Structures are given as C-alpha cells and as structure tokens.
Length: 326
Ligand code: UDP
Image (cartoon, rainbow, N blue to C red):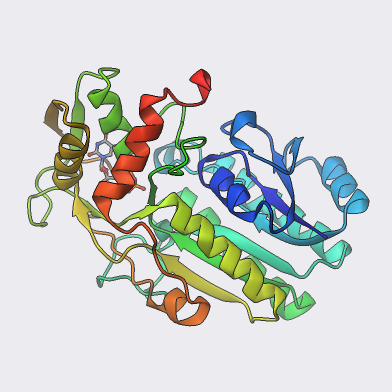
C-alpha cells in the first residue's frame, strides 16, 4: 500500500515525505515548478502536473494507493490578487480532479494542506477553528472552497478528510538536507537570513503602524517538522477510521517582525539592516493560532516551538546555499 503525496518536492511537502519514509511506501507527484528533485529524500518521484488527468489515472491504476496527502498548490497571496484565475484553477479545479480520481479508485482518505488565510482579518485571538471564515484573497479562498468540496464528498461518497490550516511555516529539517528555497523568496525569515549572508542589503519591514506591541505584524511561526508530524498523525487517524476534521496548526505564540529580526541577529551574530516600508496590502495585524483541538484529538505537540531554535535550523540550511549548492 502506498501514500500519494502531491507537492512532495516543495518546502513543506519534502519535510512531510521525509517524515513518512520508513513508515510507508511513498509516491511523490510534483511538477517541479517550485519544488526540487533533490528535496525528495526517498520513495518514488513522479514528475508531472496534478492537472494531467491521464497521468493521474495511470498513477491510481498502477499503484495500490491507500491515502493521499495533498499539498500541491500555488501559495502566494500577492500573486493570487493579481492572477486569481491561476489560484482557482490550480488549487481548486485540479484538486477536484484528484478527488474524482479518488472516488473512481475507491480511496477514502485525504490529508489536505490548508491555511490560516481562510480566516482573513481575525476578530479574536487566538484563532480557533470556529472563527468566522472570511478569506481576504483568492489564495485563502481557493483553499477554503476545496475544504467545502471535501465536506460535500464526505457526505456523498464517504470520503474522509483532515484539513490542516497552517500558520507560518518556518525552519528547516535539523539534519540539514532539506529546507526552504523559494524563487523568488517572499517570506520573512529566509529574507532576513539572506541579509545575514550579504545576499541582500537590507530587510524591509512592511508596516510599523499596526496596533501591536511594537507597531509591526505579529505571526505564529511553526517549525516545518512539527507541521510534517501533524500530517503523519492525521494520516494515521484517518486510517484508523477517524471522522473528517479541520485543525489549526501553529505554536500559539506570536512574534512581531521586529522580534524576528532581533532573533535572527542574535542567532546569526550578524549585522542586519532593517528599513521601515509601507504596509503590504492584505496583511492582518496579528495571526496567532489556537492548536488546542489538534493537541486534544490527535495528541500533536510542537517539538521545536522555540523561535531561536526554528531560526537556528533555518540558518544552518541557508548557510549551505539551498538546493542549488546541494
Ligand atoms: N514581512 C516583512 N518584510 C518582508 C517580508 C515579510 O515585513 O520582506 C512581514 C509580512 O508583512 C508579515 C510577516 O513579515 O507580517 C510574515 O510574512 P511572510 O510573507 O513570511 O508570511 P505570511 O504571514 O504572509 O504568510
């Protein structure tokens, strides 16, 4: 029996694949638009797009797939505001094709990579799964729409799902073989690390007039391996007959942009030039998760909750130069 991981060559996907190896037979499907062949540390990698129906059919026909972990997606908020069709098409249409294939081959379990972006501007902190849904961009909306599709497929076809709503994924596998390497990079921690490595001159702080303790945005950074572990727990729970569920995944602790910069300074011992800049459109002031539900129901807990440790693992990876140097 195999587990199909879509998007398994990406940042989070590659950490998920590593976590599954030695426990399951893993098949990764990735178009390698954003992912890296070298990031897939084991199992089988099939290069191809989720939208390729013939390929999908071949994969389901030729393998004994027991469950799917679905991470393949576009995930840039800014891009989704400029090109919404790309997000509805790639994240929703193609995901529905995957579900259709699962129905055809009678595969009942899917773990889905969702996002805190489904909530939009929070009304209450920490954010629980009951918080009203109001995505402020097509990215978050495409993920939410697919959650609704899965809910419907559960009712009609008894297809069970666990949707994991990630907060800010960060860090790298401490073994140093895989990590974050986006091109172009837009995320805060890797950008600050680029400044530490003199690859960038400075970090721009997007907004210093938010109503937070130092005026900059607060985010909940969670180590990518802790996210990966949650996928394993979710998969096992579904295999043991658990009902469909949705879980937030964060550390429950928020750090401002300035605090993250300060932590990078401390961890790397390098000079980091930071400059005030305009707010980035669509950025909520504070995003902090309540992960109480997944703790209680799946017995999940963060192994690497400390921001210093998260940044240390990212620093260790970044100093090696990413996948180009591997
Ligand atoms: N941010 C920033 N400068 C940058 C990149 C990000 O100030 O060059 C801020 C951004 O506005 C947000 C936080 O850092 O408040 C985290 O942003 P990131 O893009 O890493 O993740 P997001 O919260 O958008 O998922």
